[in-house]
Length: 303
Length: 327
Image (tube, rainbow over all chains, first blue to last red; front, side):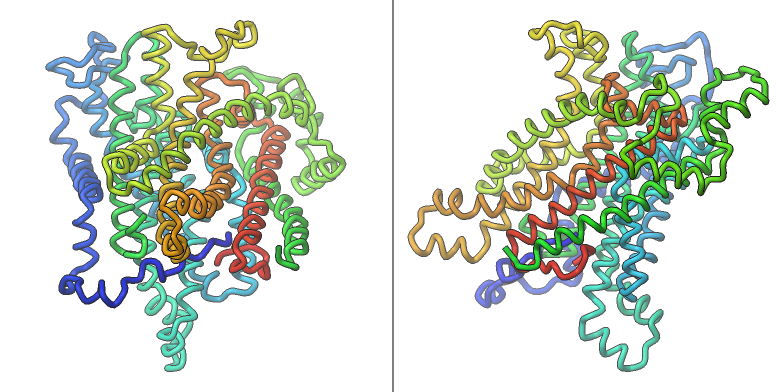
């Protein structure tokens, strides 16, 4: 994809502005990130959600899989804070457990996405030539299949479970990441410090992982954060369609699927709470990712 | 217009042929490595069928042949413009099946895209020209919210609230054909809202940043310096340049738009391509799955080529020497 390069002149501070800049902070990236209130809110929410997910066994006030037929589809009450589902299970406790599953699934699939994407993107960007041409054509192909279609097809092949959901999302979604890393490596490898290292006899693998990779890391981190939000949405979509995490293991997506049929009878609490959890998590990751990008790349700040 | 542009365009379009073959091959392998096949998927669950009958059914569909033979046969027919017949859906030809459903998807997505752009462009411009104002901050937060809302969740909530509880609108497209023209909106409102919101969020955010980028360019300073008032500088010089990346980004949203159709059409029982794909995958209807993949893939790839050509046309700095790829 050819992108229009942005001219740095517009954003480069003039001599006058530079003179009046405050003294350089020790951690300019952290300082810039903390200035962005929305991003900090995002970070706080993420940390909070992970703590809650981690502590869910202690926060839950019912066993998440306890079926009580006497309590079927009860609205929120003092005993069941978010009501019960059609099997009489406590929605609040399931939401906590489901959060654990959904956050872990999102995290694990993003680890796969970024690992494949970084390794392949780095190889393509560094070596160029036939390796690059081959890999990029392959990403062209994968990117021309709408991701959801690819995911549904791939997911329908296996007996759906948490593990297959993670693998399917991870293995289908790396092309975007590979292209990004490739672009970074291509740009970096022409720079002087790389030529210098090469002249000093650094091997290709040393050049790639000791010189280029650390410089591409910033962008990889930003991409990871944004992908975390996307992976949560994808897991929810797959589980909602019945191709992801399977009941009785709760996930935010399959809670929505379960709640859908009850919605017709007015049981709004089965749909509202899991969706709200997905929404807040995705929102928080996006806010944080956006703030990170601005903090790591000041040229982006004005946007 | 650069001299090499025509050659570039022709080369890129010809190069789509091997890419599309690769695309169908990937999808073909993906659906065939799965355990189970269309014949077992046709049986009702738990049904015990005569193995000889199953064998015969597989033979009739050509599924007993080696995979390479099956693929090449399929490809040979495609070259002659025949996408085969569906296994289910009354064995209709895939092409006419897709043709019947395409209209519903294009209408729904087209309307949502159009409304999205019509709202997003002015909102993005206003937001950029009043940077950090109350309006701008509202737009920024609003687009974050719009992008984070899982649209199937929104669809369910709106179905419950506006459809079930208040009874104002229909929650499914069933009966849309018999509805009078004045009542059509009841069927369209929910899917359009759900599909339009992320479009507004995405495009407004992009329009804003595109506009901001242009506003801070040197030629804008020049335009003001030569005496142009702010208004003419903005709408005479900036807007046109800010709209160009917008055009391309709309094109690049095509995979998201086509993908989004699958879930939303399923929720509203909207008889489009997305629902067809969903049903076909469930039934392991190989010809339909491959046909949809081929056509959406071709559409996406062609749009990508057009986007690259538009870039090359408007920005002389973009080189057309390389056959696509990164920058």
